[in-house]
Length: 280
Ligand code: PAF
Image 1: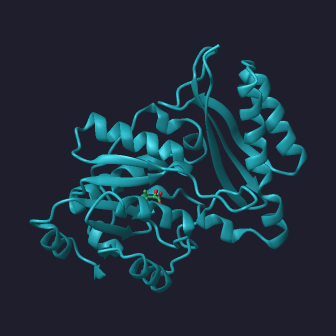
Image 2 (image 1 turned 120 degrees about the horizontal axis):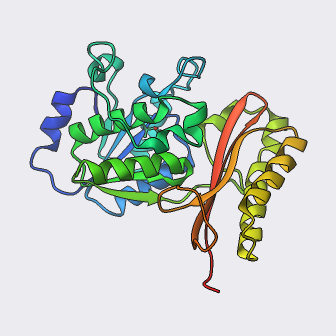
Image 3 (image 1 turned 180 degrees about the vertical axis):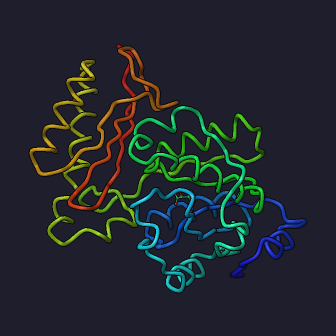
């Protein structure tokens, strides 16, 4: 595996190569990331993984400084997984002027769901992903469904800006007890970790009710939110949306998704579950 730190060197490596798959990450790699890499490897000759903790997508008071940086352990995992290139630029390389003058402005979806609580987050994500796409020039790029809003915004960006990259969504990796794999799980105390699957159980309960034919979406959202709150969670949102574009779900929609973000203690966890309803 080559470890590349500069745009110039990455571009030189990329020249003349066909079939490049790309997995952008912020490092602190876990099995969820490894599933993205497996999906990338199955689809292309060469796989590039980037590790870059992108300050643009962190708001004030968020965990940019504390975000776990584990480059040595990450690079060992990537080497063992047969990755071709680890692209690990520093801040200076991607933001030589300290920041960005020019940004990608995603659709108004950026101000909903997680966007209400993390203003500017998706603008920062879309901007760095476009920069990375321009540097790596991948044929395909893999994104996890855990960050479903991010995935939707990236898909919209690719479509609206005619980017020549195929986006491959990859299913959420889960621990045996259902907890979605996330770098932030490492912040949970042992006791919090035990209770954390309550979030998955709450959205699973909503999916079951939807499958039974309930269309009182607001009531389902309220009841599941109350259940979590009673268990000690601080819920940012728990919503039923259309999975295709994350717009408000209406009775009759078949492809839905239940998304939630909530705090277990000081740790904000997100999760979601898609559901396809049978035609009745
Ligand atoms: O999902 C992430 O880890 C980040 O948002 C991404 C896509 C690597 C952009 O910084």
